[in-house]
Image 1 (cartoon, rainbow, N blue to C red):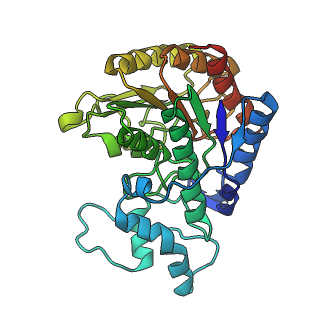
Image 2 (tube, rainbow, N blue to C red):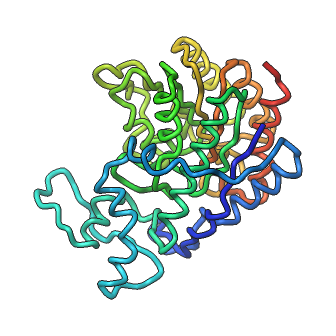
Amino acid sequence: MKTFFSERHRLHAPAKEFLDGALVDVFESPRRAEMVLRAVHAAALGPIEAPRDFGCAPIEAIHDAGYLAFLRTAHARWIAEGRPADAVYPDTFFKPQHRHRSQHVGAQAGIYMMDMSAPITAGTWEAAYWSAQVALNAADEVRGGARAAFGLCRPPGHHAHADMAGGYCYLNNAAIAAQFQRDAGAARVSVLDVDVHHGNGTQEIFYARDDVQFVSLHGDPDWQYPYFLGARGERGAGRGLGHTHNHPLPRGADDAQWLAELEIACAEIARFAPQTLVVSLGVDAFRDDPLGGMGLDEDGFSALGARIAQLRLPTVFLLEGGYAIEALGDNVVRVLKSFNDSGQ
């Protein structure tokens, strides 16, 4: 299995985020990607390559033009207005009842950022752009006939809406990869999101479509971020009705509970009969994850890889969350190695 990785991820390294009412050190740090890269190399999973540039068109196929312009320019505008240079943070949030969309950079932060966990630094746009290129290279590898590929994406992407950043995410790598595969000729694409936090951005991007299925296992939004999406009753809208499948899980869910829901999720994917699969590979359902709240152990991740292999689909794995840094690389590799070893 080929892995794609960009050194430019290091350009995005905010120092602080707001979490649980406090300014804390950012959990989504450059060290995460380095730990995964080290584990992939040690496991000899296959070649590790830098991504080639597919340009901005595949990103523009998913994301709002005004939002992309904001991501590109927000930090420079922020500095020009005399604000602190470390990062852009919103302090006011746009709500549906608000009638005026100000062009002031501080106001736009409240329009285009859904929370305070996705600060924009001088290097955020370039890092996010190349994270999306990593995803596109993995998708192209699979489009070209490979059984699977791994996009070691950082920053992650599944919380990013078409027009909003949030939850450490700026560009929705999974959605960009899925749309790329559709444009390359796949009639149907499934996205399986196994991050402990619901992939709200991916769900909403495809919510009214019948060509891309979204299936998610995650912490119930009654107790876990992002709180406002991910309930079991959210099943799509219009032509997309029945093509969104949410599997919210209780706090502390163990391997048995999680794998039972995975079995149902895989049956939903099989019924949809996609030509290809994109996996939003978060491993923060791990028992020791500081942001998780679930109880998966190492064997659970091995079982995940083996079960995905049983779907017998060309598969694009893209890194999402996982914040138990010392175990992160091992948990990711367990999924990928188990998938590889299961054959097809």
